[in-house]
Image (cartoon, rainbow over all chains, first blue to last red; front, side):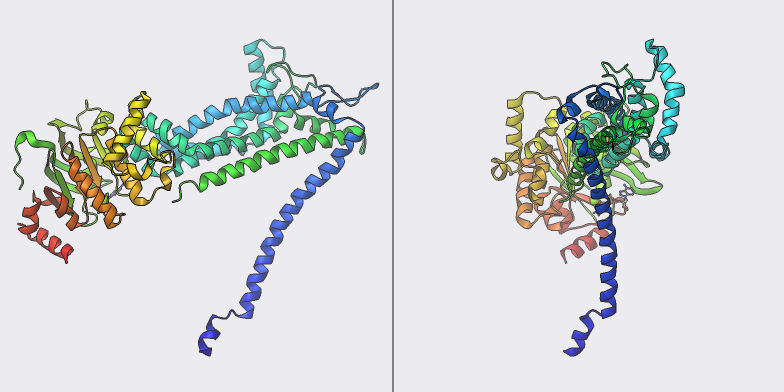
Length: 305
Length: 257
Ligand SMILES: Nc1ncnc2c1ncn2[C@@H]1O[C@H](COP(=O)(O)OP(=O)(O)OP(=O)(O)O)[C@@H](O)[C@H]1O
Ligand SMILES: [Mg+2]
């Protein structure tokens, strides 16, 4: 009896080793969590002070952002928020159809050879620094847009949407393609065997089956579009006026923070207001990522039986 | 060998060779499938049964790097001819796969899928056909109150009967079944077998099976395939009681043990 007991009791050494590995990994994940909470608290504490001197109503609903006015400084962020929403919306309008079509092409139509070449190339687009895309926007795209539409300047919401759309595209293509390729081959065979054309198979079976994964890729792209700073700083035109069309220059929230944070006095109302904008951005991107995580999780568990 | 009246032949293989990559799987297959009968394909694992049956609805074309030569006639027409519409062909030749493969949709939508492919819009007709097919596949009683349930929630046997209903809904002329009962218990198997016997009045059935008892119970003709070649093909009673080829005899006696 004793002999067998001895064999299945864990040795002290192994106990300690496993324990320390466990502690190490939980320490790392707790640190990550603490950093996230720390950032939030930091933004919150500074940002919330802005509301001691300006009303939330003005901050959220006013469309005049003019903190350095001599008489009455204005802290309405609606124009900035509109700028962010326009770039986000515009870039997604460009990137969603193109992204889904490319993903379908890569996973269902392209030959394996083409896929092997094209997919890494698309993923490389994601690694282009946004300042480089911003340069392309300034030097090449904006004169082109100005020329085509007869504008005095091509630095506007439309150009920014295109540039950010290009940045978002690889995320949407790459994730959607992964989701489509990971669908069981049985779906395709079952569909074709019932007399589906290839297009019917894609439309009636594969896209619905991949839908939540595709939505998740869009959400991730959306997170990126909301948070993008450098490229929009360069091509958006940076006007604080409330934009009325996609051909107006805009100043998204991110660009506004980046431009003004260098000039403000630490602890001033202006300073606090910029943090409040940061806080709003943080909450927006956090929500987007959070929702996309949930959707991805659901997609992954979907076809297990 | 099977002697069939000419007009009773539904599908005919003429000198069919098939390769995956460079590996030849089927060798000069000549094979006639009679109308309104159940024809069983038996043979050891890997001998090419699935490959053979998939030649009949051109499903092998989905696999890249595969090559076929020879002819497969359906109603005396070579289905590998250039003018043949493969989509139309597959609507007439339904298939049930070895592993149940419902779509990730509701039970109803699974069965209605084939009709929607054909742009049937009439809702009451779709509902009618779905019910009819589920009744035929012996699943209606179990699911009639939960047609909106995801097909993935059904048991394996129910899923397989759902796949049969899905194939029946488009009213095919020929049904190909690739080991439809391999994942099922004896009760579910018995139900599918009795279903197939009923179905042969209207359709032609080709079934791959590993189960000798099943082949003997339900089929009218049995074909023994070995190493990609047809070794023996005759009436089921004949092949089981009096196999002509030694390979057939060994396989059958071995399987019956
Ligand atoms: N997609 C494929 N690519 C390459 N080779 C394949 C492919 N599918 C089947 N094969 C090969 O073709 C041969 C015949 O396969 P097939 O599936 O027709 O056998 P089977 O008789 O149906 O076997 P089982 O009873 O196990 O289902 C096997 O050697 C297999 O390895
Ligand atoms: Mg097989």
